[in-house]
Image 1 (cartoon, rainbow, N blue to C red):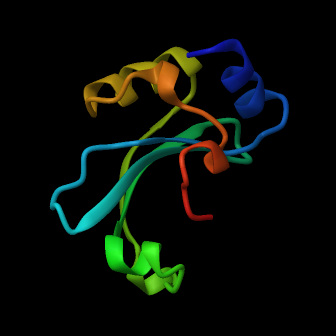
Image 2 (image 1 turned 90 degrees about the horizontal axis):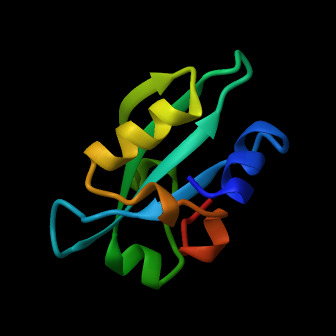
Length: 101
């Protein structure tokens, strides 16, 4: 994980994300890492139908979220993300990979 991403998670306590291979050609998919209040990091995948993202018209119920893991260490975040087939160095601020917040 890049230093600025680690700082975003630990110092700013802000979410990071990266593009992920979707389960269908009809979907956009991301891995996201959320720093929880208890000091852990939650790793999840999020999928949204492409047509809704492209039209910028979707709601919470349109999202498909899968909680993958909750970990205590940044190195464990790297391992979980790598196991999902995503390079931990591709994690970044959500707006840099079109993650819909």
